[in-house]
Length: 308
Ligand code: CIZ
Image 1 (cartoon, helix red, strand yellow):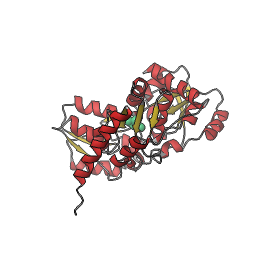
Image 2 (cartoon, rainbow, N blue to C red):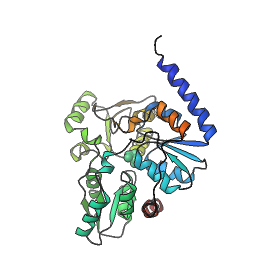
Image 3 (tube, rainbow, N blue to C red):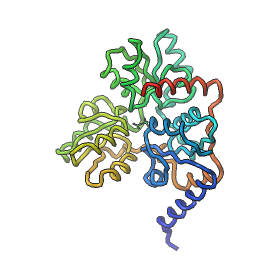
Image 4 (tube, rainbow, N blue to C red):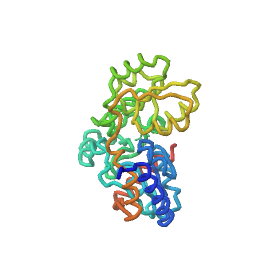
């Protein structure tokens, strides 16, 4: 018998809807998730939107379709809920580039300098930091701080972008996003030649040479907003491929081009309908953050949420 993929997926979607009701679960999905996962989610967004939503969820269970640090944030901000990450191996190489031990060494080198940590970091690193940022609010949060010098971890490209939009001295960490770093200047130039009328939008985790070629730099939520409000019809998109799902849904009359074949995050794509079904069926994999790490990391996240 021939395998019918559509029937297989429809069946899983039916099971997910049923299990969601039975378990009183709320599904959050990041903008970089697979199309079919975004389609079954209760809310899709960037980590800031999803963190804010996680605080307000009334359901007993939050299923976080994203990567580990995102589920950790939900567990930290809403500790009375059961938070599930459907695939326990879904991690973030960028988050792994900063460890609390290395950060403590850096803090010894720069005593008294506050640490601004990108949300793509572990709870243990957030606990060692002073304030958190996302790509949607990094410039605003840094500019709201009173100190003239900050340590920015772990993404060097986002940190460089922030340093160009503040008069503060930004001490950088040598981290990078293993997906955004793949996008090269050459690929962008080639795509611009193919589509001369298209606007080039890119995420601040891209290399600075790539960012120099943009018409607009923004987080995923910023890119979605920009395209929706723009009268332009064609866009070259410099971020993870999952964003195309919402861009196309929200703008059926506009065209989108991905400038590289290497803009897909393997970790984000680990979550499939099958794993989401198993997650709801078996209540797996629970993400918890132990005290005192949780309380310290919560403070770091809350300081950001107080500003934006
Ligand atoms: O903030 C986030 O969720 C990330 C990692 C990227 C973005 O811009 O949405």
